[in-house]
Image (cartoon, rainbow, N blue to C red; front, side, top):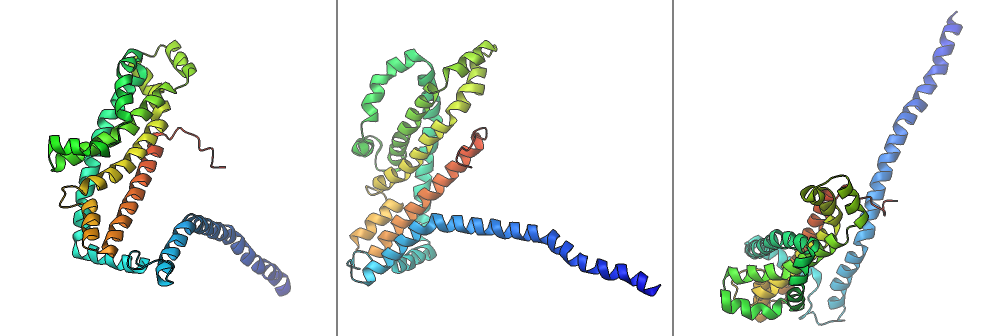
Length: 290
């Protein structure tokens, strides 16, 4: 009786361990696989940056370039940290971001509605097309003296210059987005009885959103680049002023610190705009997901 009672217990006990392993194994393996996938993707995306950093650090130390004019990356990062710790970098970044975001925001608020109108109403497009062709081919920095003469050396001229530079990519991409909407979609919407307002809301805007955001992302880059050039003339704060001031005083490491900061800000702004674009175009199918 004892042997018969113990036999099932001895047979059932070993099965508990495989069951536990089978239950935990796929989850643990899946988590490890996901972590490896994320790590591999991050490493793949950062290979070029790491290579550039290694070249920047090694070339001056090996004497391939004059380290007076191109210090090693480690020295630049030390100078960047000193600027950050002293509060100077935060002051310059704050001044530049205020001007840049103000100009970019005004450009978005004005250029997108105007682009929608020009792209939709043909008479308005025919009226304004010659004027648009004249100004779209005029570089923003070429007009910097004009803005300074009219608006002075203060904040107004810098924000106005950023507004001018950012308006064109947003405006032109908005017009292209509206004109690029499939006519079949428009005819189908009209056949369903949609009025002009609902047609814009349900068909035109969703179809034009990707192209509009392409222009906004280009404008985000222009807002930083144009502003830095503007801050080199008559500014007392900002990343452009920092770079210019460091060059004149031969603080080369500080100059490169400002350049690195501009690159980092541009990258962050672009990623934020990409996330915002995904938020407003959730209906799109990602063809690269497979």
